[in-house]
Image (cartoon, rainbow, N blue to C red; front, side, top):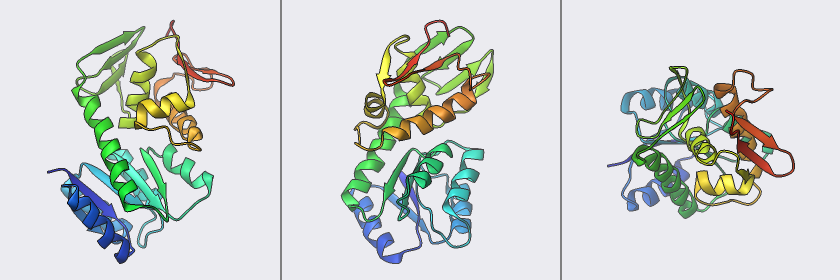
Length: 227
């Protein structure tokens, strides 16, 4: 059974979301503090983390940062923080999605399923992409440059596969959202910029002069044919 770890300090929300997630056939574990949530993540290695940002014990952003140091577990941040900068910081830390309160529990379940589908589809694709010194093994979910492994989150990996699968083709931000999230959420186009920034920081020798992922100003991004 797929396990969801919910790190949330509002008991009413925990009860509601647990009920909806269990009805969707997920196993749900919960923690009410950031520090205990991080300990629980280490102990049970869940398939996905639903992470609040305003937590006692340890801030949610710090929890996400620690998880990303050790693994690529999909993370959905759930928070009352509505400022765009908070969302972008969360995405830059490697979150796969971001939901603001108040929200529909059904939407949360839908987002959980979408993120898990993306992670699963990455594992199931049977293919291998090679461009210049960059190798992308879709079966093993591995990216390497000159034999050195590059550690990507599921969203970053799916974004790279989408772009590298069609070198030279320009993708708009909405198209990339559709490809990587399954649904193009209006108003979230800038989340792609955050993921691209993360991807370049890991992929490019010099992120300020990208060799692989190029910006097409006013349109979106493309993967360089020359790589």
